[in-house]
Length: 430
Image (cartoon, rainbow, N blue to C red; front, side):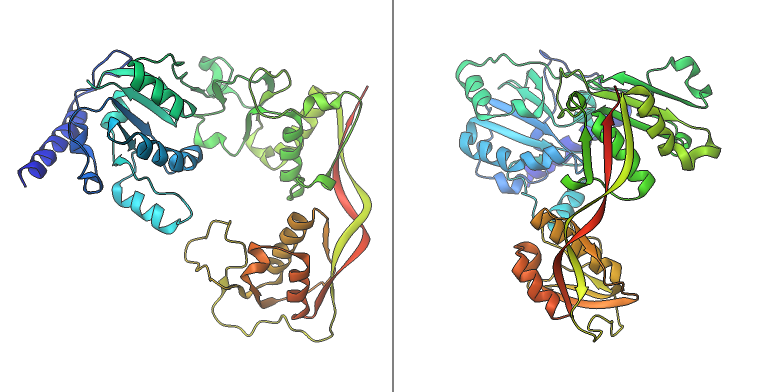
């Protein structure tokens, strides 16, 4: 009981400290004079662990919005289990313990941390000047800061080297600088319209910290290829994606240089920023297309090509789709999709109840095009709401045969036909 009271007192003291003083950011060589044990929110899971000094303490700063942090949790759990009481890895985030539990409860496909956790933190974030995540702090047995690194440096090899030698050569984490634009700060607020293209600045994020009023008038992209610049512009203009193989045609001997994958040290990746006057907001992506064609020797267009496609047709004169009314329901997707608020994921079936037919058509399009890498065209021309129930396996373990069987129950079929399909054409101009 006295131990718990002591921890509460120490935790409240730490909170009071951060609220009443401006903590100085700790650097390599600084000592951390904070009782970490008093801040642990899941200490009950670690009662059997030794309370003495650890050879190595690692603080792993994360958040609910850091996808790479969430993906790394199975690896972190494995490392803690592997090295046992010689190290302690502590997850630290600003979200509260209640918010953490709710997230892992509502998203059971995420791996829950089995290491110690500090939740609702502000003090450690301030002490280590955490701006971007993952943010890894390495502390020796005296809680002296030895390293501050990126997430990929937290691995078995580096931990083993540290334990064996008390030292380790690692690159210091480079802080990402977030800036409003590449223009002079003194005149930024007076800019009414502009566009610029620059070689990618890999440690910067162009367009961040802009005023809310400019979010509607601006388009900002960082570290992006020319292919994706054109795709993003056309997707906004035509209100559809161009991500399938048959939806993009690239023509030209040297045009491949503009289609690089993400990474540093590449010549053909760019930062692009555009601002238009408020009265021309509706045309900003059309302006972006015109910009790109001025900046690059590329002519873009939408054309139509006739290629084999799966076509959805009626196989019966009876209307077997029409809804019977009632409360709407939608679980018509695979388990890999994130459930939306208020929806229930059924174990054996996927349900579409009293929903517009377009919901059904979109789901079938996704199944066919992803599962067969072939275009899908809907010629049913159905109006109104529908009720549809599919076996869950149709989504979670797709086969064309299984889909055809399900469609047959609703008077529908798929046929392979040559059909006109729209595509984005990027052609090199000499």
